[in-house]
Image 1 (cartoon, helix red, strand yellow):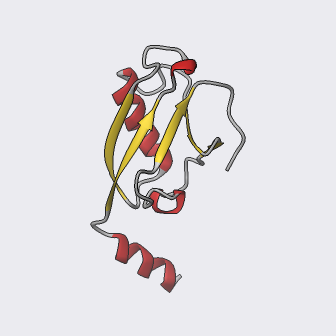
Image 2 (image 1 turned 90 degrees about the horizontal axis):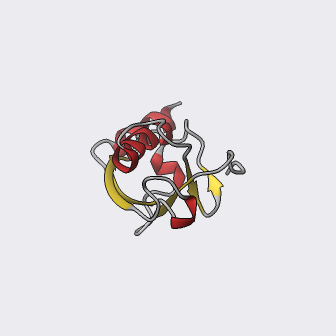
Length: 103
């Protein structure tokens, strides 16, 4: 518990710029579109996905989309800092498909 609190404290004020791409073969209104967005390190993937969808599609839930990293879906409850977002140039794919395999 103390370690978790210490980690959270150390990540306060830390943010990551994350690059998202909707591949052309995904189709839809944002096919081939890329966006770079900055998020707090403690942001949850589910919250990030809503913002990404807003940027790509104009609204969350407008098209089926899943955030992927190296072909695996990112769980919505996972904080960005645990998803590997601190790695420079961390790319994420915004796929359109049935739910991909979990990370």
